[in-house]
Length: 127
Image 1 (cartoon, helix red, strand yellow):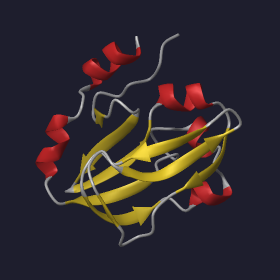
Image 2 (cartoon, one colour; image 1 turned 135 degrees about the horizontal axis):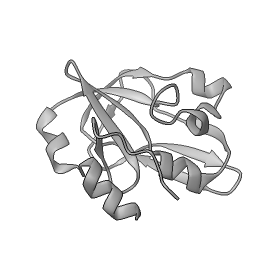
Image 3 (cartoon, one colour; image 1 turned 180 degrees about the horizontal axis):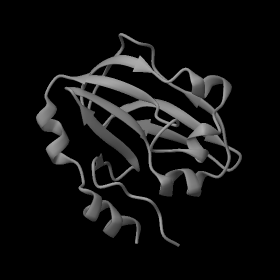
Image 4 (tube, helix red, strand yellow; image 1 turned 30 degrees about the horizontal axis):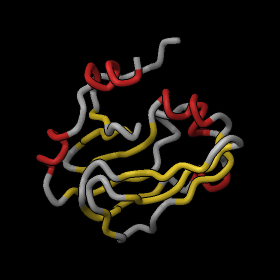
């Protein structure tokens, strides 16, 4: 099976993606991750203003099959949370790289993105 892996973002081995735009990093889970989870029924996210640390847990995604921790791709302050997911968690399945995004972080060090996997490296991991 082939999964969508956009090459405009970076990836964690734990299947989160990070897209930097104008100094803010938008975060979600990958197409592969949502497929493995099955139907997402609940998403727990931090509050705006919370601080997160790179590669530490920031929330939980719950599906009909499993509960999985979510990990931050960069350290920084949460500046936005996708509140649509509270009423429509299925957006994570329907559009994991678009409407199913989870949060936006103002990073302490944008250079942390360089430590993450490229699209090619992530594709190798899930192959």
